[in-house]
Length: 257
Image 1 (tube, rainbow, N blue to C red):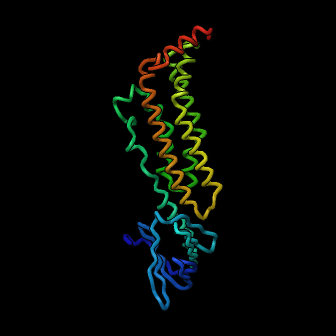
Image 2: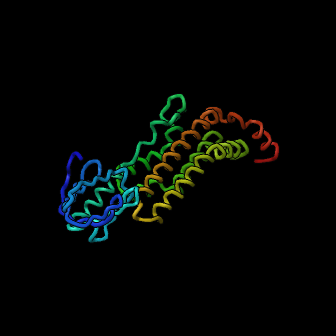
Image 3: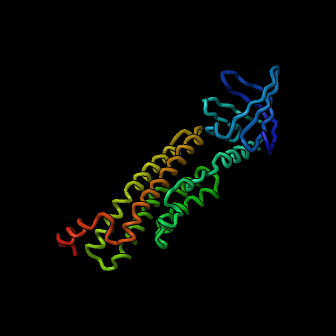
C-alpha cells in the first residue's frame, strides 16, 4: 500500500473471511485503504480497499471497520484512531466528477447567452461545496434537493418573465412549457432526496455504502438537468417554443389576461 501515511500499534478483534482475529496488530493508513498487519502464531496482512469499505465508526474507544462482505473488525489501542476514522471518511468521500459525460453542459451550440449558466448554477455551486468538504454530512447538505428544485422553478419563471415581461397568456404559457420540460429533473431530485434520507436515517455502520448510492443519484440528477437543458434550448431561442405554439394560442383564446 503506497504511500504509507501513518502506522498505529493497536489490537484487533473480529471476523475476516470467516476467520476470527484477536490480538496485536499494526494499522497502516495509506492512500488506497487500510492495512492491518496482524501478529500471532499465524501472522498475516489484511487490506481493506477504500472502495470496499462500507463504514468506519468511532465510539470513543473503538474504530469499527465494516467491509462490503459484511465483515467487521474492531480496532482499539490509541485515541488517534478517531483521527483515522475522520481521514477514512475524507478519503472515501472524494466527490466524483459529474459533468464529463453531459451533452449540453458547456457546449457552445447549447448555450444561448447566460441562460445556460443560470440553469446549471445551483447544481454547480452544490458540486463545488461537495468537492471542497469531504464529509458525508456536508456533501448531503450541499445537494439539498428541495433547494435545488426551488432554484430550478425560479429559473424557469425568470426565463418566462424575461421573454414576456407583461403578465399574460404568453408568459404563463411559456412558463408552463418550461416547467413541463423540467419535470424529469425534478423527478431526479425527488430520488436524490430519498437517497439522502436513506443515508441520514440508515445504518451508520454502512454509511459509506449509502453515500455511494447517493452519489449515483447525484449523477442522475446532473444527467436529467442536462437533458432538460437540451430540450429547453429551442424554446428559449424562440420564445414561442418549439412545439407549444398551438396550445399557447388556445390559452390566449380561452381568455387568460
